[in-house]
Length: 319
Image 1 (cartoon, rainbow, N blue to C red):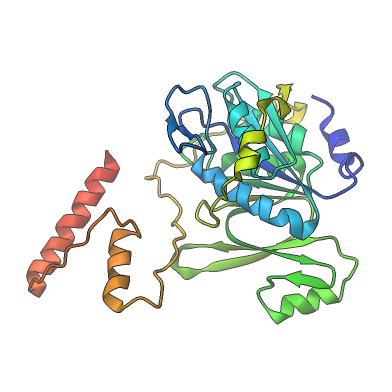
Image 2 (spheres, rainbow, N blue to C red; image 1 turned 180 degrees about the vertical axis):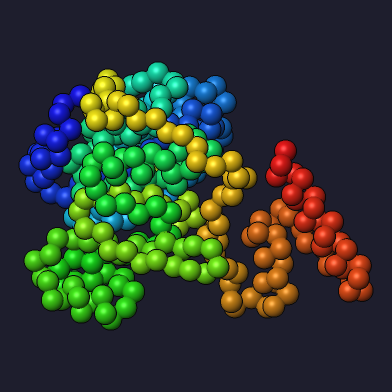
Protein backbone atom coordinates (compact mmCIF):
# COMPACT_ATOMS: atom_id res chain seq x y z
CA UNK A 1 0.00 0.00 0.00
CA UNK A 2 1.35 3.47 -0.77
CA UNK A 3 2.47 5.65 2.08
CA UNK A 4 -0.61 6.55 4.14
CA UNK A 5 0.33 10.21 4.66
CA UNK A 6 1.11 10.62 0.96
CA UNK A 7 -2.32 9.25 0.08
CA UNK A 8 -3.98 11.76 2.36
CA UNK A 9 -2.08 14.65 0.80
CA UNK A 10 -3.48 13.75 -2.62
CA UNK A 11 -7.02 14.58 -1.46
CA UNK A 12 -8.67 16.80 -4.06
CA UNK A 13 -5.79 16.71 -6.54
CA UNK A 14 -6.95 13.73 -8.62
CA UNK A 15 -10.59 14.74 -8.98
CA UNK A 16 -11.92 18.06 -10.22
CA UNK A 17 -15.28 17.83 -8.43
CA UNK A 18 -16.68 16.64 -5.15
CA UNK A 19 -16.71 12.88 -4.74
CA UNK A 20 -18.98 10.99 -2.36
CA UNK A 21 -17.90 7.50 -1.40
CA UNK A 22 -20.07 4.60 -0.28
CA UNK A 23 -18.35 1.76 1.60
CA UNK A 24 -20.44 -1.39 1.22
CA UNK A 25 -20.32 -4.92 2.57
CA UNK A 26 -20.42 -7.82 0.16
CA UNK A 27 -23.27 -9.88 1.62
CA UNK A 28 -22.95 -13.10 -0.35
CA UNK A 29 -25.61 -14.85 1.74
CA UNK A 30 -28.44 -12.50 0.70
CA UNK A 31 -30.72 -13.43 -2.18
CA UNK A 32 -30.70 -11.08 -5.14
CA UNK A 33 -34.07 -10.31 -6.77
CA UNK A 34 -34.19 -9.91 -10.52
CA UNK A 35 -35.76 -6.54 -11.41
CA UNK A 36 -37.89 -7.87 -14.30
CA UNK A 37 -39.49 -10.94 -12.75
CA UNK A 38 -38.96 -10.07 -9.05
CA UNK A 39 -37.88 -13.69 -8.57
CA UNK A 40 -34.93 -14.56 -6.38
CA UNK A 41 -31.57 -15.98 -7.37
CA UNK A 42 -30.90 -18.87 -4.99
CA UNK A 43 -27.72 -20.04 -6.72
CA UNK A 44 -25.55 -17.71 -4.59
CA UNK A 45 -23.79 -16.52 -7.76
CA UNK A 46 -24.75 -12.93 -7.01
CA UNK A 47 -24.58 -10.80 -3.90
CA UNK A 48 -27.35 -8.39 -2.93
CA UNK A 49 -27.02 -4.96 -1.34
CA UNK A 50 -27.26 -5.56 2.43
CA UNK A 51 -30.18 -3.89 4.17
CA UNK A 52 -27.82 -2.02 6.51
CA UNK A 53 -26.06 -0.43 3.49
CA UNK A 54 -29.13 0.49 1.43
CA UNK A 55 -29.83 3.69 3.37
CA UNK A 56 -26.20 4.81 3.01
CA UNK A 57 -26.36 4.32 -0.76
CA UNK A 58 -29.68 6.16 -1.04
CA UNK A 59 -28.38 9.14 0.96
CA UNK A 60 -25.29 9.36 -1.27
CA UNK A 61 -27.41 9.22 -4.43
CA UNK A 62 -29.76 11.88 -3.05
CA UNK A 63 -26.85 14.21 -2.27
CA UNK A 64 -25.34 13.66 -5.71
CA UNK A 65 -27.39 16.38 -7.39
CA UNK A 66 -27.48 18.70 -4.35
CA UNK A 67 -23.69 18.84 -4.19
CA UNK A 68 -22.93 18.38 -7.89
CA UNK A 69 -20.86 15.38 -6.92
CA UNK A 70 -19.88 11.97 -8.23
CA UNK A 71 -20.69 8.79 -6.32
CA UNK A 72 -18.04 6.10 -5.90
CA UNK A 73 -19.12 2.73 -4.44
CA UNK A 74 -16.51 0.36 -3.06
CA UNK A 75 -16.65 -3.09 -1.50
CA UNK A 76 -14.19 -5.74 -0.34
CA UNK A 77 -15.09 -9.33 -1.16
CA UNK A 78 -15.15 -12.14 -3.72
CA UNK A 79 -16.14 -12.01 -7.37
CA UNK A 80 -19.80 -12.56 -6.42
CA UNK A 81 -19.86 -9.03 -5.01
CA UNK A 82 -19.33 -7.57 -8.49
CA UNK A 83 -23.02 -8.02 -9.35
CA UNK A 84 -23.97 -6.01 -6.25
CA UNK A 85 -21.70 -3.17 -7.34
CA UNK A 86 -23.05 -3.23 -10.88
CA UNK A 87 -26.54 -2.73 -9.43
CA UNK A 88 -25.28 0.48 -7.76
CA UNK A 89 -24.31 1.76 -11.23
CA UNK A 90 -27.84 1.08 -12.43
CA UNK A 91 -29.17 3.08 -9.49
CA UNK A 92 -27.09 6.12 -10.38
CA UNK A 93 -23.56 5.65 -9.01
CA UNK A 94 -20.78 6.92 -11.27
CA UNK A 95 -18.08 4.39 -10.43
CA UNK A 96 -17.84 1.07 -8.62
CA UNK A 97 -14.68 -0.62 -7.35
CA UNK A 98 -14.37 -4.20 -6.13
CA UNK A 99 -11.33 -5.07 -4.03
CA UNK A 100 -10.86 -8.80 -4.51
CA UNK A 101 -10.02 -10.52 -1.25
CA UNK A 102 -10.31 -13.89 0.42
CA UNK A 103 -12.86 -14.37 3.16
CA UNK A 104 -11.89 -13.87 6.77
CA UNK A 105 -10.26 -10.45 6.56
CA UNK A 106 -10.31 -8.53 9.83
CA UNK A 107 -12.16 -5.24 10.15
CA UNK A 108 -8.81 -3.43 10.26
CA UNK A 109 -7.77 -4.96 6.93
CA UNK A 110 -11.16 -4.21 5.36
CA UNK A 111 -10.97 -0.59 6.51
CA UNK A 112 -7.42 -0.23 5.14
CA UNK A 113 -8.48 -1.47 1.70
CA UNK A 114 -11.50 0.82 1.67
CA UNK A 115 -9.35 3.78 2.73
CA UNK A 116 -6.93 3.21 -0.14
CA UNK A 117 -9.80 3.55 -2.65
CA UNK A 118 -11.92 6.21 -0.92
CA UNK A 119 -9.05 8.51 0.09
CA UNK A 120 -10.09 11.23 -2.41
CA UNK A 121 -13.73 11.31 -1.27
CA UNK A 122 -14.99 14.36 0.58
CA UNK A 123 -17.66 12.33 2.38
CA UNK A 124 -17.91 8.58 2.86
CA UNK A 125 -21.19 6.92 3.78
CA UNK A 126 -21.33 3.49 5.38
CA UNK A 127 -23.94 1.14 6.72
CA UNK A 128 -24.55 0.88 10.43
CA UNK A 129 -23.02 -2.58 10.91
CA UNK A 130 -19.75 -4.40 10.32
CA UNK A 131 -18.80 -8.07 10.44
CA UNK A 132 -18.50 -8.23 14.22
CA UNK A 133 -21.89 -8.57 15.95
CA UNK A 134 -23.41 -5.81 13.78
CA UNK A 135 -21.36 -3.05 15.42
CA UNK A 136 -20.03 -0.10 13.36
CA UNK A 137 -16.34 -0.97 13.73
CA UNK A 138 -15.32 -0.47 10.09
CA UNK A 139 -16.72 3.10 9.79
CA UNK A 140 -14.80 4.16 12.89
CA UNK A 141 -11.59 2.54 11.67
CA UNK A 142 -12.08 4.05 8.23
CA UNK A 143 -12.43 7.53 9.72
CA UNK A 144 -9.25 7.03 11.73
CA UNK A 145 -7.25 5.86 8.70
CA UNK A 146 -8.49 8.77 6.59
CA UNK A 147 -7.94 11.18 9.50
CA UNK A 148 -11.50 12.33 8.91
CA UNK A 149 -14.41 13.50 11.03
CA UNK A 150 -16.89 10.81 11.91
CA UNK A 151 -20.55 10.52 12.86
CA UNK A 152 -21.95 7.09 13.64
CA UNK A 153 -25.59 6.04 13.67
CA UNK A 154 -26.92 9.11 11.85
CA UNK A 155 -30.68 9.32 11.31
CA UNK A 156 -31.05 12.67 9.49
CA UNK A 157 -28.76 14.37 6.97
CA UNK A 158 -29.20 17.85 5.49
CA UNK A 159 -26.98 19.93 3.23
CA UNK A 160 -25.64 23.46 3.63
CA UNK A 161 -23.43 25.04 1.00
CA UNK A 162 -22.23 28.66 1.02
CA UNK A 163 -25.17 31.04 1.27
CA UNK A 164 -27.67 28.40 0.15
CA UNK A 165 -28.99 25.98 2.72
CA UNK A 166 -31.02 22.97 1.71
CA UNK A 167 -33.39 21.52 4.28
CA UNK A 168 -31.80 23.42 7.14
CA UNK A 169 -33.16 22.56 10.54
CA UNK A 170 -33.27 26.08 11.94
CA UNK A 171 -32.88 29.77 11.08
CA UNK A 172 -29.69 29.78 13.10
CA UNK A 173 -27.97 27.41 10.68
CA UNK A 174 -29.11 29.50 7.71
CA UNK A 175 -27.58 32.59 9.29
CA UNK A 176 -24.31 30.80 9.94
CA UNK A 177 -24.10 29.65 6.33
CA UNK A 178 -24.83 33.12 4.91
CA UNK A 179 -21.95 34.56 6.89
CA UNK A 180 -19.49 32.30 5.07
CA UNK A 181 -20.33 32.18 1.35
CA UNK A 182 -16.98 30.65 0.41
CA UNK A 183 -17.26 27.81 2.90
CA UNK A 184 -17.04 24.35 1.29
CA UNK A 185 -20.19 22.21 1.34
CA UNK A 186 -20.99 20.85 4.76
CA UNK A 187 -23.52 18.41 6.13
CA UNK A 188 -25.76 18.78 9.15
CA UNK A 189 -26.37 15.35 10.66
CA UNK A 190 -28.48 14.27 13.60
CA UNK A 191 -27.86 11.30 15.85
CA UNK A 192 -30.51 9.89 18.15
CA UNK A 193 -29.80 8.30 21.51
CA UNK A 194 -31.82 6.55 24.15
CA UNK A 195 -34.42 8.49 26.17
CA UNK A 196 -35.10 10.91 23.31
CA UNK A 197 -31.68 12.57 23.35
CA UNK A 198 -30.30 13.98 20.10
CA UNK A 199 -26.98 15.28 18.86
CA UNK A 200 -26.60 17.70 15.94
CA UNK A 201 -23.23 17.77 14.17
CA UNK A 202 -21.81 19.78 11.28
CA UNK A 203 -19.35 17.86 9.12
CA UNK A 204 -17.05 19.46 6.55
CA UNK A 205 -15.00 17.52 3.99
CA UNK A 206 -13.55 14.95 4.91
CA UNK A 207 -16.10 13.03 6.91
CA UNK A 208 -17.16 9.41 7.45
CA UNK A 209 -20.84 8.88 8.24
CA UNK A 210 -22.62 5.64 9.11
CA UNK A 211 -26.34 5.82 8.39
CA UNK A 212 -29.17 4.24 10.34
CA UNK A 213 -30.76 1.58 8.09
CA UNK A 214 -34.20 3.14 8.58
CA UNK A 215 -33.08 6.67 7.68
CA UNK A 216 -33.85 6.25 3.96
CA UNK A 217 -35.39 3.73 1.60
CA UNK A 218 -33.34 2.71 -1.41
CA UNK A 219 -34.81 3.65 -4.80
CA UNK A 220 -35.38 1.14 -7.58
CA UNK A 221 -33.43 1.28 -10.81
CA UNK A 222 -35.29 2.13 -13.99
CA UNK A 223 -35.91 -0.65 -16.50
CA UNK A 224 -33.49 0.82 -19.04
CA UNK A 225 -30.76 1.21 -16.43
CA UNK A 226 -31.28 -2.34 -15.12
CA UNK A 227 -30.99 -3.77 -18.65
CA UNK A 228 -28.01 -1.60 -19.57
CA UNK A 229 -25.89 -2.31 -16.51
CA UNK A 230 -22.82 -4.44 -17.03
CA UNK A 231 -20.61 -6.14 -14.50
CA UNK A 232 -17.68 -5.34 -16.78
CA UNK A 233 -18.00 -1.69 -15.76
CA UNK A 234 -16.97 -2.55 -12.19
CA UNK A 235 -13.27 -1.89 -11.59
CA UNK A 236 -11.56 -4.86 -9.91
CA UNK A 237 -8.43 -4.25 -7.83
CA UNK A 238 -6.26 -6.45 -5.62
CA UNK A 239 -6.00 -6.05 -1.88
CA UNK A 240 -3.34 -3.84 -0.34
CA UNK A 241 -1.24 -4.35 2.74
CA UNK A 242 -1.88 -2.60 6.02
CA UNK A 243 -0.11 0.72 6.65
CA UNK A 244 2.81 0.35 9.01
CA UNK A 245 1.12 2.20 11.87
CA UNK A 246 -1.88 -0.15 11.73
CA UNK A 247 -0.14 -3.52 11.43
CA UNK A 248 -0.14 -4.09 15.18
CA UNK A 249 -3.77 -3.00 15.56
CA UNK A 250 -5.85 -5.69 17.26
CA UNK A 251 -9.41 -5.17 18.47
CA UNK A 252 -10.34 -6.61 21.86
CA UNK A 253 -13.79 -6.61 23.48
CA UNK A 254 -13.94 -4.31 26.51
CA UNK A 255 -16.94 -5.94 28.17
CA UNK A 256 -19.17 -8.99 28.25
CA UNK A 257 -22.58 -7.39 28.78
CA UNK A 258 -25.48 -8.52 26.55
CA UNK A 259 -25.49 -6.95 23.11
CA UNK A 260 -28.18 -4.29 22.78
CA UNK A 261 -28.84 -3.18 19.19
CA UNK A 262 -29.44 0.46 18.39
CA UNK A 263 -33.05 1.62 18.57
CA UNK A 264 -34.73 1.38 15.17
CA UNK A 265 -35.98 4.51 13.46
CA UNK A 266 -39.58 3.85 12.35
CA UNK A 267 -42.12 6.13 10.74
CA UNK A 268 -45.34 6.68 12.66
CA UNK A 269 -48.78 5.84 11.23
CA UNK A 270 -50.63 8.23 8.95
CA UNK A 271 -52.25 10.89 11.12
CA UNK A 272 -55.24 11.08 8.77
CA UNK A 273 -56.30 7.52 9.68
CA UNK A 274 -58.91 6.90 12.37
CA UNK A 275 -57.59 6.16 15.84
CA UNK A 276 -58.36 2.43 15.70
CA UNK A 277 -56.59 2.04 12.36
CA UNK A 278 -53.53 3.90 13.67
CA UNK A 279 -53.41 1.54 16.65
CA UNK A 280 -53.66 -1.44 14.27
CA UNK A 281 -50.71 -0.09 12.24
CA UNK A 282 -48.64 0.22 15.41
CA UNK A 283 -49.50 -3.31 16.51
CA UNK A 284 -48.76 -4.91 13.14
CA UNK A 285 -45.66 -2.84 12.37
CA UNK A 286 -47.25 -1.68 9.12
CA UNK A 287 -47.29 -5.24 7.76
CA UNK A 288 -50.79 -6.05 6.41
CA UNK A 289 -49.99 -9.77 6.55
CA UNK A 290 -50.05 -9.59 10.33
CA UNK A 291 -53.41 -9.28 12.01
CA UNK A 292 -54.04 -7.67 15.37
CA UNK A 293 -57.08 -9.18 17.02
CA UNK A 294 -58.67 -7.01 19.74
CA UNK A 295 -59.00 -8.57 23.18
CA UNK A 296 -61.35 -7.36 25.89
CA UNK A 297 -59.88 -8.27 29.29
CA UNK A 298 -60.08 -7.05 32.83
CA UNK A 299 -56.99 -5.15 34.09
CA UNK A 300 -55.48 -8.14 35.94
CA UNK A 301 -55.81 -10.50 32.96
CA UNK A 302 -54.49 -7.85 30.57
CA UNK A 303 -51.41 -7.26 32.73
CA UNK A 304 -50.76 -11.00 32.97
CA UNK A 305 -51.04 -11.38 29.18
CA UNK A 306 -48.57 -8.53 28.64
CA UNK A 307 -46.03 -10.11 30.99
CA UNK A 308 -46.34 -13.49 29.29
CA UNK A 309 -45.96 -11.94 25.84
CA UNK A 310 -42.87 -9.95 26.83
CA UNK A 311 -41.32 -13.07 28.39
CA UNK A 312 -41.96 -15.00 25.16
CA UNK A 313 -40.29 -12.26 23.11
CA UNK A 314 -37.28 -12.33 25.44
CA UNK A 315 -36.91 -16.10 25.11
CA UNK A 316 -37.07 -15.93 21.31
CA UNK A 317 -34.35 -13.23 21.20
CA UNK A 318 -32.03 -15.31 23.39
CA UNK A 319 -32.24 -18.19 20.93
